[in-house]
Amino acid sequence: MFSGTFTAIVTPFKDGSVDEAALKSLMRFGIEGGVNGFVPCGTTGESPTLSHEEHNRVIELTVKEVAGQVKVIAGTGSNSTEEALALTRHAKKVGADGALLVSPYYNKPTQDGLYRHFKTIAENVDLPLVLYNIQGRTGVNIENGTMEKLSKLPNIVGVKEASGSILQMSEVIRLCGSQFDVLSGDDQMTFPLMSLGGKGVISVVTNIVPERMSALTRHMIAGEIDKARAIHFEIFELCQAMFLETNPIPVKAALGIMGKIRPEFRLPLCEPSPANLEKLKSVLERYGLI
Image 1 (tube, one colour):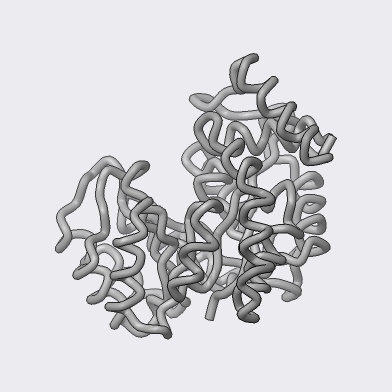
Image 2: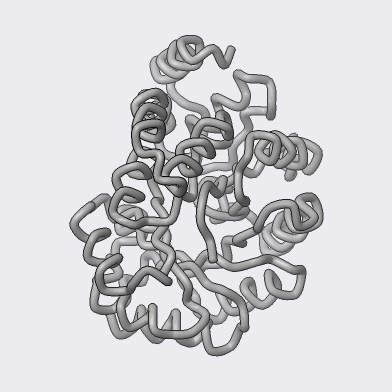
């Protein structure tokens, strides 16, 4: 259902408010670059600091702006099942193609708690759901046995895998089958994951170079492994630079340097250190982006 390149799009701010004009411009840039869709209000979109009203507005705006040209997987996860339900219901109401549900963070639920959380949402909202497994952010890993059980629920269609373990990803693909869309949650893992049968990536770097990662996933889907491998190594350093500091600090700083948005954050996130900013500028210069 979901394959190719999906941009985990940033939420631009201007004087403390969502900069809707800049957000629309970024979506046009991504569509022109060949992305298959957008994921608004994820980690890269600074969802923890968006109000519910802003969150819902960004998702609705994204759906309206893309107007069916590409898919929208709305970030609707929460560490409260009721809140995740409300956000997911809204995403369905405004026409999103699917929803991305991060594991409940801070609570540290058991595997049974994780299963019940996702099952409750799946049973109450008729929308394709992609789980988001990122223990480094949430403090809990969706273990492979739990993922296999969840994959059997009709509208849980895939997972954004950011465990960092290629062994875990391999096992998820083996257990859940080819109809379950395993998407990389790390740009640098896209090529190796797709070589195992993964379907694509939910990408940070495509905020700044949508055409390169889009080409990589297209080549992999077409079986053009050598061409995809060449792009993997070509953009490897740029992908690494997106994590000089906590995401989305580097990518928003890069977009600011490129003149595409104001490099504005909401606390507790803040601008990168002067040393890392210089490193980032150096990488952008080498890639001809500034």
